[in-house]
Length: 236
Image 1 (cartoon, rainbow, N blue to C red):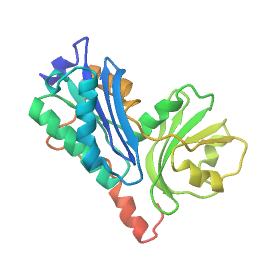
Image 2 (tube, rainbow, N blue to C red):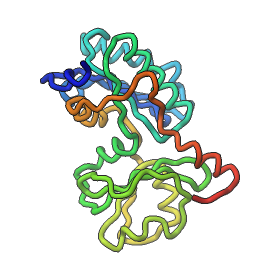
Image 3 (spheres, helix red, strand yellow):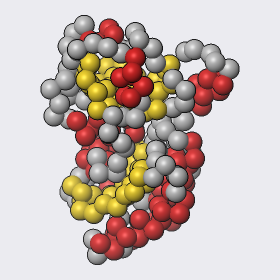
Image 4 (cartoon, one colour):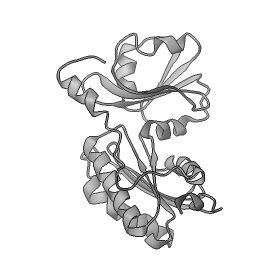
């Protein structure tokens, strides 16, 4: 039944992004954003804002919950609490409406914001704690060439990629990298934050492919083990 949904020409997908301080909700039709509401605050007010934003986005598009074809959620890595709030809301909606759940990797949606970059490598990096970041390494077509990791940043971080071209680091963790890595082959964009705006195309591609999560068992991508190691100052 769910696979059959992927064959439909039109899809109305609600996208939820709560992995960081930005509480972001968008509504996309066939991958194109038709409504968005977001607010970036260091107070992590997702529990108060998320459901309000969902209602406001639907209202602005003159649509109702029952017209949704799927709900997509940013799967992490990111804030433990933020991810829990977003995933809980997404699973609740999918269960109540009987529609598919789609997960979108947080770091990949960040890279969507610089899709047309001339850099040879794009590395989204999210600030974790102390000198730690979450990162993934992509080529300039946004294909993954190194899996998502939690790592401690040092002066030698990502050096093997700069030997083959320019490297663009984007996101809150790029500030840590900028203070340590000095090389003309490295570029930095510290202003990129995860947003539901970039989730539209990614969630639609997964919808068309029938790439859905199990609503009952899906969990966010916390990278918990690393955080526990970090408390003991253990390197990965």
